[in-house]
Image (cartoon, rainbow, N blue to C red; front, side, top):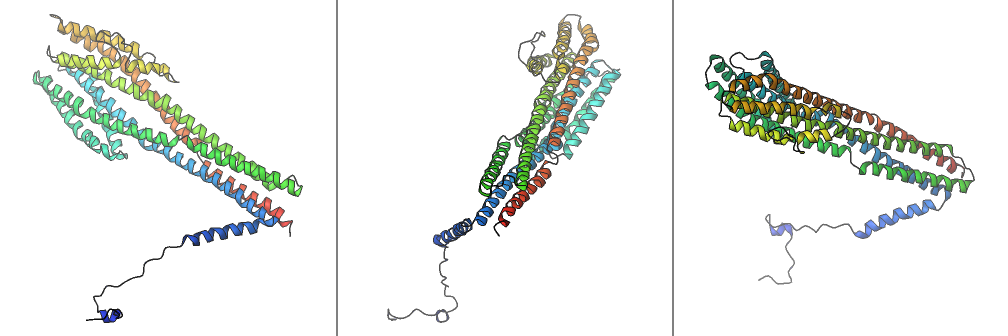
Length: 467
């Protein structure tokens, strides 16, 4: 038995598998940190014990205040420039492209139905409108594919790219059967329209909604209220420090003009004023672009899509030869969302009244939309009544291809003009908002660096007098 008083074996005696015992890590004593802070405080007290030391401490504090102003101005400017650039170059164009895809595809679907209604010999204008709309939509889809769309809607982009050719194939088959007088052509066209309304257009809707969220996010980052507030607070603190320091220095030295310090104060004040003015102008232009461009563009695009849907339903209902109750009901629902009942009377609420109430610099381009839609709605009512009347079907088709199409094209042309005008205003305001901040970060950096040099030079002149 080993006595209890025996010493523990050494590592060599314990063998190669004995566990190593390490000493616990030592934490730095709080007292050491306190001593370091106490040493720094002592250094400051020693510096403040002499007039030159006090002047150096004051100049260091003023330079620190100027540096804080520079940081606030520089970071705010760069952050807003990036946010504006994101709206202008990425999310904004992607949103416009998604809106255009939806509108062009809706027009293609409605034009295909109208052309089919004419029989084997399609109206050239309707056929050209269909081809132009499909080509424009395909171009916009390619543009979206090159853009950095969110990963969450990549599937929608894939749907558009894959299903548009399927849709055009169905339309081509319907046209071929229609030229030969086969009734099955109408079934192919209804299948194509169903694909468009239930798969393709919803995918375009989701894509546009995702890009609208990105636009809102970038707008939020470009117009944060606390950024100019922070710049103003740091700037006023720096200016106040400069003024107080100069007054105190003048009382002590009885010299009332220190040119470098005065110059530093002026440069700081000008830098603060320019920064706040530029931020204000940038925000004002972004708000103008949103209220006068983005919002009207969105509302008019929605109105145009609903109108095209109602027009296409009218043609599909006639193609069905008395079996178009589903299309008629869908047209009534689209018309109700526009703000009108089945007979074309305004309900007081809906997309078109909202578009008229927006106001803004381009309000005149939207002023006649309701009037033009009511003119078409009256024709659409006559078409439905004629199609359901005994012996009135051919007259209803003639009216749909003639005055009905003319009335709708008047509305659609006005809506497209309003949409394009709002889009141009949106683009122009984004560009001018970015221009408002152009070069500001560099200008403020150079100016405040000179202000800091002026502070050091002004105080060094007084410090040298003590030697």
